[in-house]
Amino acid sequence: MRTLAVLPLLAACVATPCEPLSEVPIHGEPEERIGLIEAAIDTFDSWTSRDICLSSVELADQAVTGEEYFGEYYPNRKLARVVIGPEDSDAEITNTMWHELCHAADHGLSDAYAALWIGAIDNPLLETDPYEDFAYLCAYGPDVLRAAAQEECDQPSILVAAVQVLEAEVFDTEDRGPLCP
Image 1 (tube, rainbow, N blue to C red):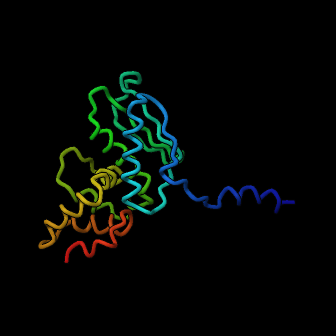
Image 2 (image 1 turned 45 degrees about the horizontal axis):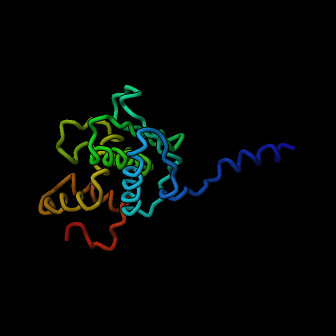
Image 3 (image 1 turned 90 degrees about the vertical axis):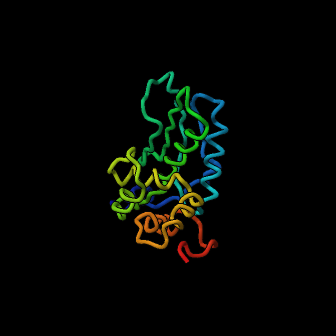
């Protein structure tokens, strides 16, 4: 009898495949920005073939909610929340979506390579929180990061090391050749 009681628990623990990012539902306000979020998700999806588990994206109108932050990722719910302010540009909204998708792609990389993320970019806005710094760096995308790292290939560089990890673990860049020839 105990065996039967354990079966539902085991079934719940079995990893289920993630839905394709192109099928992730997006809801909330302002509705006119949903297309922008879809485009940001499509771009991120073109950067990686890895499983990015995201159940939904929720937009929140800052004018209505009064929230101060731009975005948040809830790993337990696989939910990305993007708060859109009245003055936010398309680029800011796109970058926020990429940042939250990077949180979804993290899979423990922020902890495993904490020193890389904290020291990779000289930016006073960055926290000394590897979880946030990983997502901040990742949100630049593979093309911008590769170009920046290649400028530092002739010297010891934390940025080069960080980009190498991102290329190996998040972005699909195998066909581009070595980062630093």
